[in-house]
Length: 295
Image 1 (spheres, rainbow, N blue to C red):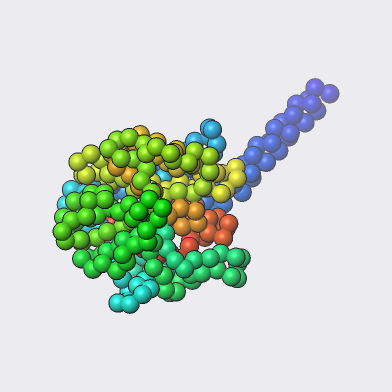
Image 2: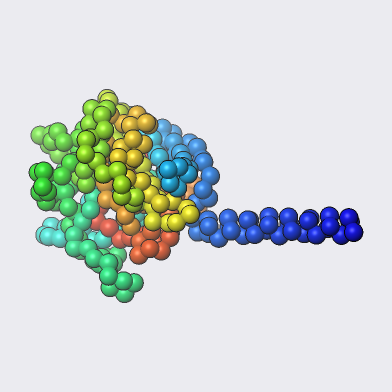
């Protein structure tokens, strides 16, 4: 009797373990495993994946870049056309591959855009779009930007020598990438940021002297995996990692972080995008920020 009971308990325990492993495999299928990671990607570039369970599930991807690294160059998506709309939509993976980059994230919001269902959405790859904010690439300004309720949207300016500054337009613009709103200014979290709405987010920040660049992507809209963060939480993440200035880029289904796979040379998505509520599906967007490094 005792032997039979031990066998029964052993079988039940094995079944529970298999059930848990199966659930874990289902949860992470096609998505990065929800476990912390910290690694060097390239010279001057590190990647960290943080997993938070409280006050809600959130998987956070952080890339820290030393912009003074030899052979490192930044790129904002160049214009495709002289007239409006100036860009053809690309996924972040397409952008990385087309311009032979090693790291890329999504950029500014854009128009036109709609998503009414799997068969009724815009843009598709190749469709023409315009960024919401001031945009430039390689000295060519291709979008002047839409004004919002508080004026022009915030903008990160990047010089030919990788000098970075927010909202301080230089005499000669080289690269410019705009965003949704400022999150951190002079080391302080911007007042009035929303602290209730959880969404996928993308943000970019710099340290006090502009040497270090921080790219942050947070997965969201994925129950039991990652719900996302609020703007206020996003600001705290940037500040915790050393950002003195930071702004939010386009979020939601646009939030994507891609690197070049060191083995295959193909794009490797490090986060779990959620376009059309499909985990792992990338959205075609307007502009991006890319980084090339010496390998």
